[in-house]
Image (cartoon, rainbow, N blue to C red; front, top):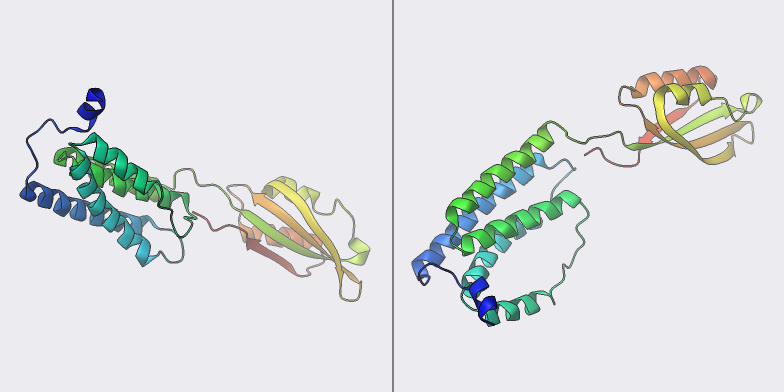
Amino acid sequence: MEIIDQIFVNSESEPTIWMSLLAMALATILSLLITKVYQITFSGEKYSQNFVHTIVMMSVVVSVVMTVVSGNAGVAFGLFAVFSLIRFRSAVTDAKDIAYIFFGLVVGMTCGLYQFNLAMLLTVFASLLFYFLYKFEYGKGKDTQILKVTVPENLNHENLLDDVFQTYTISNNLRQVETTNLGTMILYTYAIRCKENTKDKELLDRIREKNANLKVSLSYVERAE
């Protein structure tokens, strides 16, 4: 038990109300910086204001929690047991949002342990890292697209677009075949992933040369990050 106590006991002097207030204030300021970076690097249509507020509130609350548990192992395990019963009421769909949640939590924990220099260093370093990953689009790849091609019945054969796919796509899978226009047309639906240098218009133009200039549509399954 003595070993466990040593893990949670702060080696510095007993915390005062002013130190706790300073920890909460710094956690608030740093979490606001974190949420500002989140807003800048968000690539969806609209981020949740509630999620932004949650990051700030969690950082402040966790800073207080760490102040409470830093000198008492029994209280620490009790609080961890209570937190284990709490579940998020809504699912986090974006993996990057999870990273920001942990970012805010760790900053709050560091402030609560009065490691103010480390908290500021972590915030600045991780914020720059998030920003540069976003700015330079590190790891970005082509999204899966749904290609629908209408072909006259007299041109209908399986290998009609093989040379186009070989030139412009990384992969292609035929998903559906159906007849349209009273059976005089065939509608093919493909799931494709284009090569990095492929332009959508160029791909559509090449397909129109093959399908007698009939309707061709291209839609994205996933939003580009």
